[in-house]
Image (tube, rainbow, N blue to C red; front, side, top):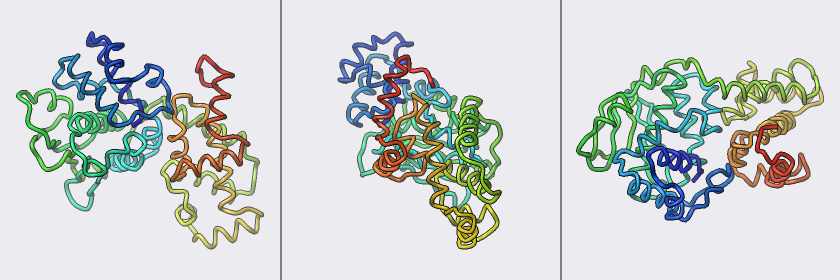
Amino acid sequence: MLTVGSRVLVETCARLGVDTSMLLRAAGIQRETLDNPDARLPNAVAGALWDRAYELSRDPVLSLHVAEACPVGAYRVIEYAASAARTIGDMFRVGARYFELINSGLKISIDDSGAPVTFDLSPASGGEGITRVAEYSLAVFALHVRAAAGVTGLRQVTFTHRRPADIREYERVFGCAVQFESEHDRLVIEKSAWDTPKRGGDPGLFAVLTEHAAMLLSTLPLAPDLVERTRRVIDARLRASDPSLEGAARELGTSGRTLQRELRKLGYSYADLVDEVRQAMAQVYMHQPDMSLAEVGYLLGFAAQSAFTRAFKRWNGCTPRQARARATLANPTGRRV
């Protein structure tokens, strides 16, 4: 499990007057671990941290208050990709696609075949006891989509756990009816809102996008118009996790076979263009010290971290972890370079 939620949990507890050193010791976690973007906590350890936090804070809806304290942009890879989403539904889909990065013990299921749309959170392997992480995760999804787009279209939220004595905080945070002792931990979203074009965005995330675009322009050599247009399409489609030849060809108004043939006439191949765009993008992402290496690999469209590591070593002669360690030694303050 990524340490983002645990870090915000500890920060929230500190504001509530909890002795966070005692909290971390009780859960067996080093503070340095929370500040390391490449660190992951075993689900059992993260669960112990939440359990102890509830005991010490005495806040019955701590999960909701932690979700409110989680800043937009905290989950960089998901929110970076979501900033390019075309609709509200696409924002939720991006979150579902990358959710394994945050917590591999849970899975998200979306049913948008009818109205309303359902967005379910459940254990990945039939486990139990996801009450707090379900509350936190669904609240973060709702709050961050609302912050980025101005609307979520929530009709109802349901939870599988027992109804608390007071549900007013749930209704305030989600802004809709909340039901308990249900079959699913679920967001129920109006179909009309799901299909609504997204507006707005987060300035910080768009600053990263701008930096990324500038890097591509400065590192890739000028080429014929078709090659430049293909590069731009690959760039956009990598953020949506679909750098396929056929998908890019559709955006360029042609077929995959025709695109490949025309590129070959110019001395290029589609696979080589994907590789060089990935290499340029990697240089930008690796300079984001709060972006984990797993997130970088996902943003570049690699299904497995091992594939990203092999490609990075081919590009740079070292592994991503070695490159980040060298950058840390060269820039010990942690400022972006």
